[in-house]
Image (cartoon, rainbow, N blue to C red; front, top):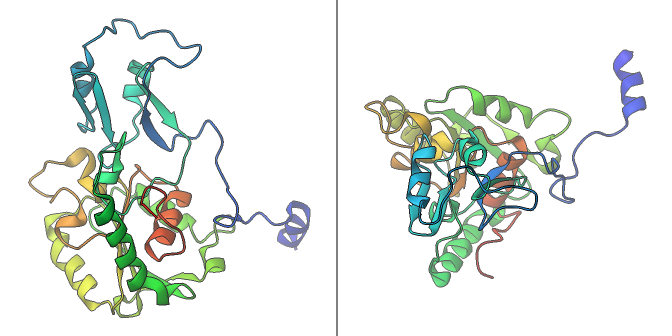
Length: 271
């Protein structure tokens, strides 16, 4: 009885995403972005000086920052969102509230974006669209932990709660790879899980989509390089969608899944 009264009092809490934007607000730490200069109201960082950008590389524990002269880039596929760079150099880095951070290519996770071949990107997007156009009405996901610390699993589990409710979009989780359309992989890609991960992929029927969920799955995260990991899951299975974040939020995971099955388009890919 109490849950009926609570439901009547609170109304519908389920997100309208992706039909309508559903942001977390300006304070959400969705991703790191590179800024060209101090933001309004922010003083130049103590000790900052022109030509010292090479020192920025040392700020990141996962070497996600690349600096060459005045050109600075952040590899979101290696970033664990610790915020060290923002705290130390707010004149060069800031948090972006965006949750739509997934990409169809690994290189697209580097910001500012590295120029890519437009024709190749268009061909990649068209190929993925042809493969998955039959999956839009009913999609089943097989989730595999390939050496996760457990953080991503909490966000994956949240996809089934009343706020995100992925079943409203025709998306379901399955225990059998033979029933799965999407392979959602978390974890750093341990050597011991390479065989089972590959076997799971090969057991899935065509068409099949692989989503690398989280910085660990993309690049190995904090524990790469390591004797026990391959530096992400891309060494074991072909990845179609890369979702950065440590961990990625449920909205980011949902964006990656919808991107992979063709419901959403990659805004960075050419039309």
